[in-house]
Image 1: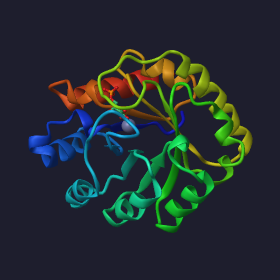
Image 2: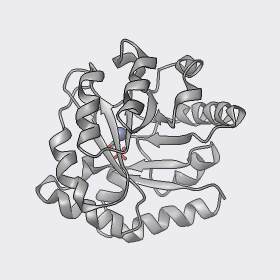
Image 3: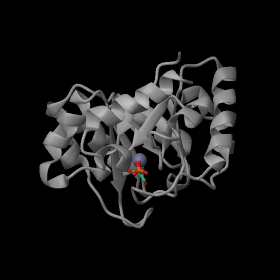
Image 4: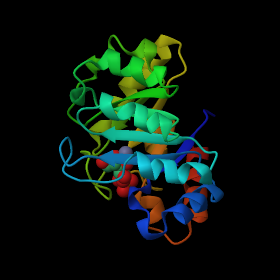
Length: 221
Ligand code: DX5
Ligand code: ZN
């Protein structure tokens, strides 16, 4: 069985008690904290920045997986690295120089990921896959939690899985948007190994039961 990782998105957490919401999902068995950064410019919503990343950093040893939905990208990368991010992913349309941004993220000591919106073609992988640590396939249009999974993401995941396997490199394949207990197995079968889930986890009372149910589904793959 591949290594599967569950990454709760704190976008759906209760921000009035964010620290507790971070520690409780990790105690419930999550592997990463997915940290959604929206700028009301690249996406139509405004969320959290490096200060919040810095504030939650001491609460867990789990990697903080920063998903930048911002334009421009480069200016904010060093700030997130200093704030303790482990992985920084960005959307290629939001960067003038994709290769440079990947290099910048690495120079800051973080792993680098490239994010594909539902309508973004995969050609951005042609000359970048050899440098990436993670590919993130969006299965909703970015900006909000609680949206419905867009099924074409499955075909895209299969294609990216094929490219990653052909590269012989260890690259995580993450999926983000509308991931639930009842579709996680199908998404894993399409090749994803890292699953962002916001509303599916934070919208339930018992985080441990939900994460265990996701893992039970993954066992069936
Ligand atoms: C959407 C964000 C997601 C979001 C997922 O733009 O990137 O990470 O929190 O939320 P759910 O799991 O509720 O679809
Ligand atoms: Zn996200």
